[in-house]
Image 1: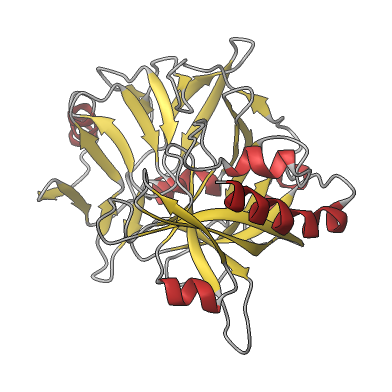
Image 2: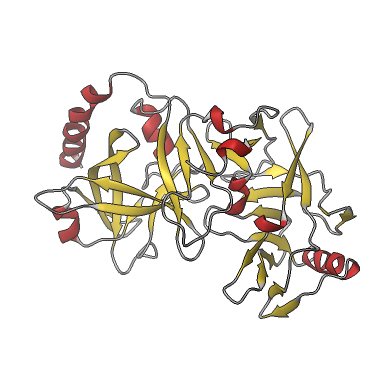
Length: 345
């Protein structure tokens, strides 16, 4: 353990002098995987002519810093072995990563094939504090790369999975105020109080157009890894009943809903509760809760879950809203995006 600490201390000391002034924010581009999950790409140490980079999912609900690679790949990319991590079941490494305009030394674990983390590539931005996995927000703050322990997400509007980079961006540490609509403010939402989970209460006024849906959810959460929004099995049928009442054609296949047209669809709205108990109305237009398929049909981007009292926003919400997650305050921040700055970065 003493050897591991000495290696870590020596490695980090080499970068202390590089970053004498406090950075406000680190910014990286975001893109979509084919399954709809958001990821960002980091380059890290390389020896010789080998180009070393990794695609990482920003994890806001679970704390894991893992890169699935072989020991040879870690060595070729200049990572220093810190020893075995019994909880994750893999080797701990430290390497220097390019995050935004900064060189940042990060510790990660390379899980072996027996680990349930095997195959994953993630960096932790969650509320959790795990002794076996350093929280990236804590680490970046302690090393004075960022001013606050928070991360913000924004996506370009009208983006498709086949478009080239970037799909949007992630701001770590400070918000990009230029993205916010001039008639909107960055609002702290009240915390619902779930342990180790970013969540906020809902006014229970979920509507399809002017139709109030039944069995409304109690809280809202956000999903980086899916374009699908989630409703409970008790609320989802009322959405389909609203379709029926408006003469909207659809068909169901293996729990997926398909529509020939979105012409008759209405905006879906609900009110989140801000820190001062005032409502913050979130509006999803039909383009943000459907996606057009190659056959011309539209798939409804809603799924249902058993015994889920939450409305879980899929990542398409980041097209219209700038959303942040503050670790110290355990709260979600949100603002309506400026249309001028929502189409391209």
